[in-house]
Length: 260
Image: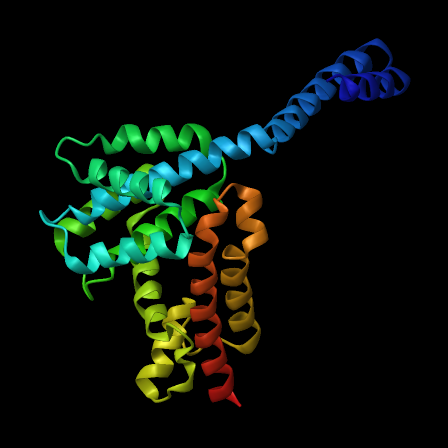
């Protein structure tokens, strides 16, 4: 790929003579290299690699997190089964997901290497790391409380993915609140319900209408199916993201009705 070098080199030669040519060739080379990386990142082959790595990593880390406190609760098993059902996996895919979950829960599982492998394929895309972390957070809150051992493992996983503990804390609060709006729970009302709706959107009750809408649109964008597919999230996992979008929408609708 050499278009950038040709165009920038000629432009530099016209504007700056021989020195301009050298500068133009250098800038053109940088442009060509960036363009090549962008095209490679969005190639069908690379998207397929990302989807495969994302699938493997999510179930490995779900198993690792579920075992963090020494045992895997029935709620954690049910939550993982729910993800598998929502993904609509085939029998073979379901068996593989379960095997990955068990491998992640096994003693001696090398979590650092697992995340490093994920980062090598998907690490440049922060949205993929954010999506992976949100799946882990959703498992952490299923038992209506997170134990110290689970929190330490979750913070460690987040750190390996490039996020700090305060970001994890915010996601935990939002996930716990969003769960109250499962299957359109916005029809219920009351001060506590309204407070939960604000927490679900990650904003305070003092936020103005413009900032409220901005926070809502940002969350919806993060869970938009087209965006997730383009980033390499497997199509099978979109049902989970869609359900999360419905919870966010239910919380937002409750707030807007209360403000009217």
